Structure formats: structure tokens, C-alpha cells
Amino acid sequence: MIKKITCIECPKGCGLELDIENCHVIKVSGNKCPKGEKYAIAEIEDPVRILTSTVAAQGLSLKMVPVRTDKPIPKSRMREVMKEIKKLKISKPQLPGDIVLKNILGLNVDLIVTRNVC
Amino acid sequence: MIKRDLVIVGGGPAGMAAAISAHENGSKDILLLERDQYLGGILNQCIHTGFGLEYFKEVLTGPEYASRFIEKIKDIPNIEVSLKSFVVKLTTGKELTFLKPGCLTQVRAKAIIMATGCREKTREMVHIAGFRPAGIFSAGLAQKLINIEGLLPGKEVVIVGSGDIGLIMARRFRLEGASVKAVIEIKKTSRGLIRNVAQCIEDFDIPFYLSHKITKIYGKDRVEKVSVSRVDDAFNAILGSEFDIACDTVLISVGLIPENELLEMTRGASVPGLFVCGNSLKVYDVVDSVTKDSIEAGRVAAEYLKGL
Image (tube, rainbow over all chains, first blue to last red; front, side):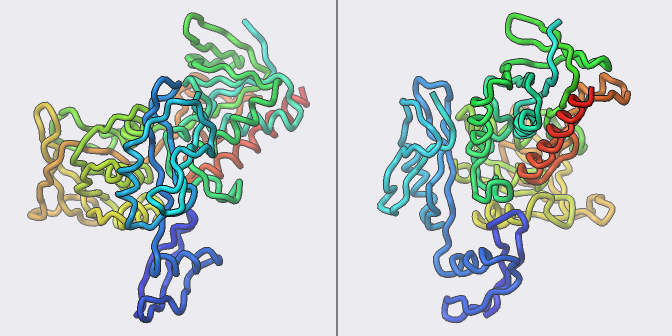
């Protein structure tokens, strides 16, 4: 089966053509770099995304602290992870890269701060 | 009147890169004016990833990209950063007037770099008929309300135009639990990057209407619904194709225009030593291009100062 998707690894947005057999990608074309092939395989076999959001701050210089997952998470788990993020509050100063929540839902992924807040 | 070698207006990605570059090229007396209480400009509200791939060779969020430059500037004593400083006047004699809480300051510069970024086009620029109820926002304002203020401005959203900020906000509203009823684009193709159509619209199964336009906004106090029509090649509504979408919020995402209100005060005069860079020169797709452009502006300004 042939499937067409758009690579989201960079702003070029290459149009990829995938040859798929039994839910496995056997050939990728249309990609201008090796990231495209990696993305195509992941997109069919185990689609993942980096999730970005905000956490409410208490008693700090910002009202909202931007955060992201340090690694991509399964696309199907984004909603659940958002629910976990909503439960959080940040009340201590943070630097970009500081961990707010370790090993979210056992996914082996941490939630990290992306902006300096004091 | 204070005197400085180089004054840079705007502390976003353009102004920060220009300041660092001018310093690296020999300028030792730099004043960077920023109207907000933080450096970083619009990057602070762009919490999504996709920045820095070209310049840093890694994928960063907006605040992370900004903080790389903010930290660098902190370590350069020759760059004086003045926050909450809103420039209100620019003359052909390279005199700037800026407001800071409690004082009005005039500064005469040997060189000036304008790095004032861009603005969103408004509802008025795309001529949507109908009422003027609450609930109509530019996509970037909605982004600020959610990401900086922590407020969700609506629950059922229709997005007019497929600019990148609108696409990014479609995903953001969905992640925050709101419903995005449709993205309506008058052209045959997306205005924004195709990767944003993939990861913001297709990922969330949001209805995306190409060759369609909003013909009317309804609602007395708050937006209640919009009428949508298919359009022909001349962008005229096709009779009989109209349908309604119930919603409480309309986001406008129809593109950006360079912000150069201050430059207009020079009435188009050619002023030696006055430079423009980043999105206030030309609206770029990605911030990496803004950085590259502004590094060049900083270098050229430093060369100009050396030649005086």
C-alpha cells in the first residue's frame, strides 16, 4: 500500500511517499534528508510528538511557565499527559531544562521547563 | 539628551542578535530598548517547538531559543538593556524619544537599528461583514492570553485564515480542551507551513476548508455563529454554497505585516546610519532567518560606526 504524508521534522515539510506492508514501512521516498525516513517509519509504526504546554505559577514573576516533554511521547497519549500537566503548580524559581515532573505516566519521559522564571 | 553609539529598538530575536553581532564586530556602546518587561519578544509566547533547527541545529521552543540570546547578552556589559522602554519618536537626526515608567528620555545615536518585528493583520483588513461582538481575536492575541496570561478565550473556535499562528493555535486550543470547529482559508493552499497543517490540523482531525471564506459573523454580545461560503477563483462567494458554523470565538490569522510606525516618522528620508532588520524589514517564515538577517545588520552597523 502506498501512503503519502508530510514530514514535520523541519520547515521544508517534504512530501513523503511510503510503501507499507503489514503495518511496516518498506520504502520511503521524497525525503531530502535521513530524518524523513526515520520520521516516516515512526509515523506508521509508533507515531510520537513532543508535547508543549504551560504550568500555572504561584508567587513567581510569571503567571504561566512554558514546559515541554524532553523526548517525544506517543501521539495517542497526548490528552492523558495534558491532564497530568494540568494538575501541576510551580512555586519555585526554575531554569530552562529543570524537571517539573519525572517519568510522566511511566512513559520514561520528563516534563521540563523552557523559560527562566524567578 | 543622552548620547550613545548604537541604539537598537526592540529586544526580540532580531534586536538581540543585532546587538550581539554589533558587539562582536567592535561596537562598545550599545543601548537595547525593549518595551516589554522581559527580553525575547514574541518568542516568549511561542511555546511550541520548531525553532533553531537551522541556527542551532537542534529543535527548540520559542522561550528556549530566546533564552540562548538573553543569557549571552547578560554577559556583555557593553550592551545596556533598558526594559519597559517604549520608543515614541524617531527623527532624521537619529534622535529617539522613549517612555519608561516615570520618565521620558531622549537619546541621540550615531547609528540606530530598528528591530521592531511585525504585527498581525486584523479583521478590518480582510473585510468580514456582520456584527462586532466579543470573542473575535487575532491568533497571536489568543496565544498571549493562553500561554502568558493563562486564560482560555473561548470554547468553540473558528479560525479565519491558515497563517502559521492560527494553525499552531488550533492545536493549542484543542490541547486545552476547547473544540476547534473549522479553519477557513480563502486560497486553494495553506498560507502557513505545510508541516503545521500536518501536526496541528491533521493530527487533531480539525476540519480544514480551502477555497472558503467567512461571509458574516453573528452575535449580539458574544459571537454566536459564522456563515461560510465556497469561493470562486476571484474569491467571490459562490451562491448557494453557504452554511453556518456555531461558535463562540473567531480567530483571525491572515498574515503579518512589518511594524514600522517609527520609521514612517522619518517620512521616507534616507538616513545614513539608520538600519532595519528582522521581521520589521520583511516577514520571515522562521526565526532562524530573522537571526541571520539581524547578525548582518549588527555587523553593517558596527562597520558604519568604525567609518565615522
